[in-house]
Amino acid sequence: MVERLTLNDGGVIPQLGLGVWQVPAADVSAVVGHALAAGYRHIDTAAAYGNEEGVGEALRGSALAREDVFLTTKVWNGDHGRDRALAACRKSLQRLDVEWVDLLLIHWPVPSAGKYVDAWEGLIAARDAGLARSIGVSNFNPDHLERIIDSTGVVPAVNQIELHPGFMQPSLRAFHAQHGIVTEAWSPLGQGQVLRDPAVLETAGAVGRTPAQVVIRWHLQLGNIVIPKSVTPSRIEENFDVDGFSLSHEQMEALASLTGSRIGPDPATFSFGA
Ligand code: NDP
Image 1 (cartoon, rainbow, N blue to C red):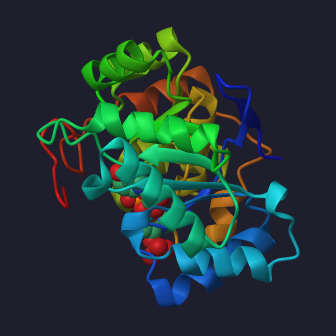
Image 2: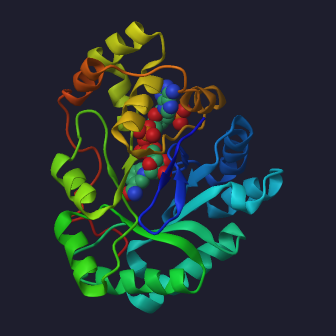
């Protein structure tokens, strides 16, 4: 049973979902369809992933009501600015063929463009218009978070950040805890690299589960939202089958002690597409 976390605006989000970055547009409907059949009720996409249409197709093809699936999308770097962000949200809704998303995020802060506060105002407008039930950000550092909060008084519900054993972002997570922002982990499996780590393999052996199940359980016990991606049906099922065991304090610490580094871009400088 997937836990549901309550957000600072009263919304509830299933703690485990499926991420679809790099899932080809031609395949995404089948991949998401398989995940929904396996029990997933939370899908994470983005305008920049180029696969929103297929995500919508899978939702329509399932027997599930729109209310039963938590859907996240993101506003891309070229759409900062209040009106552009609002228009980008409307275009995402059209591609997804839905009336609202459950969570709308600013994908990256793009500090060099200097428009993320305006983009945040666009997301507030989207929420006020009923186009997004909750709003948040992705890849925001504490200084970016402070700026949007100070400028608008609206605290993001979520910050979706790179987070996996070996790259735990402790100071950013502490900032989230202080401000009631839920931490959502992207590349939670370290894009697969973490699954080969000896400490992960040893823990998996000790609890009789797979390395991916152990890493997902680690995120859940930390309180993170976790959105592992897979196009492989058996892995989609495996990643959802994380009940019935828990990690001890020592096992949690063993994974937290991995050495590693950031895999993705640095949010302070990333400006692709702006
Ligand atoms: P993940 O950490 O989820 O790793 C995905 C990789 O792990 C794929 O190669 C997948 O292979 C493999 N994998 C998945 N499950 C297993 C398993 N059980 N055993 C072995 N290998 C496995 O990386 P992502 O970078 O995709 O991150 C997840 C999601 O986070 C994205 O899809 C996206 O939604 C979000 N994200 C957000 C970003 C942002 O800027 N906001 C940036 C990056 C990601 P295969 O698919 O071949 O099965």
